[in-house]
Amino acid sequence: MTRAACPGSFDPVTLGHVDIIARTSRLFDEVVVAVGVNDSKRVMFNTDERVGLLEEVLADLPNVRVMTFSGLLVDFCTEHDISAVVKGLRAVSDFDYELQMAQMNSTLARVDTLFMPTSPAYSYLASSLVKEVARHGGDVSEHVPPVVLAALKEKLAG
Ligand code: ADP
Image: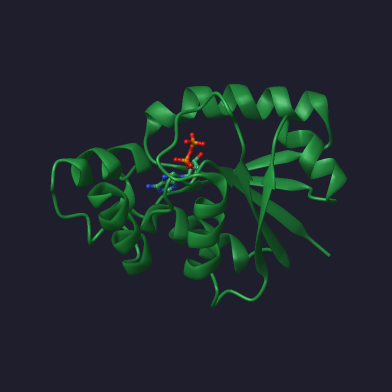
């Protein structure tokens, strides 16, 4: 059985993430969406909220499940018998850091990283940008699933 991880903060999940996760789910038997729990990182949505939104958005992909991890991603992968990490690449600017991390991770454990080019429609999309636009009242309905749009509106209204 092949199992891959799609790691990230998902604060909140965007259509760019969904695209990578859905495509990964067609290549592997199982996909674990690994939500990083990092207390020093400032987030808009807490861990439960980020997991809840992912679960709702990914409910129609039967071989995908959502889990949290803290500490090293490679340790999480080893513990859960995950042999591949799949990362979306938006532009060459993503590549430098991702390559460094992939090479470091492969020295730490037997975990390979695969890069998947993002669909052109999402190449400029990032959670941080979505939050910034939403904070200023901009329309992000084309960039996030409807439940996330509702959650953003609620968060920003409160
Ligand atoms: P981070 O943990 O760096 O905050 P994110 O949660 O924003 O990362 O994203 C997690 C991963 O999802 C990224 O490392 C990247 O592989 C992928 N990703 C993010 N945005 C996109 C996008 N627009 N298109 C494709 N992949 C993306």
